[in-house]
Length: 191
Ligand code: ADP
Image (cartoon, rainbow, N blue to C red; front, side, top):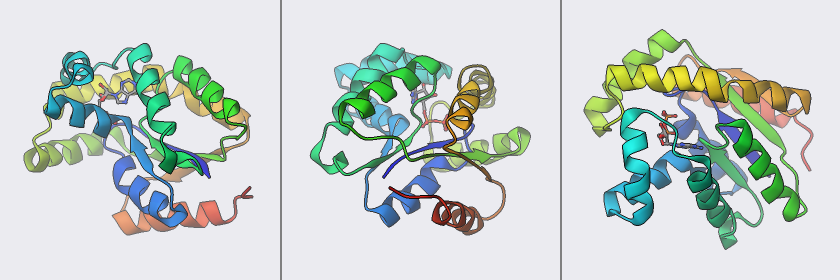
């Protein structure tokens, strides 16, 4: 099973990704989490990514692509994976296509969580109090939302055209959203 979960910042991708990945016994691969872990450890990758992340910008494609390629080459991702936060640009879509085709597999489905952007700012500001993420200030959140609309939303049409898009309402309680995802996936033809 090869899945992508998409949605604007704060849509709850990471939360839902874990449930879905556990269900299919595949790793949930979050590019944001990998970047943050590298920033914390002070690795070369972390140093490269930090300034972009703090400003709410996307890390350059060549950095992100290499990182994802390495991660999905790991043995635990051999039977599948759920990507959270990747691809985020059309160039990343192409890269990912190449990576998946190379292994002789295909992408099964792309989940998109739809949310109210204004309500999400509140959610993210609350999260910043709990998690203390450097990029959860109001200005940076707005920047990330703009970038999402500009660079990432166009991906939805690409995947819709391929017939693998599953759009879901991401508002409501966490378990309501989880239920919607499972309902949608169960009716999906699985390979
Ligand atoms: P969000 O809640 O904003 O979706 P993430 O945790 O997914 O946050 O990502 C945090 C930051 O990591 C992004 O704002 C960006 O700087 C960087 N990042 C994550 N994934 C990518 C990607 N695929 N391409 C470029 N930058 C990325």
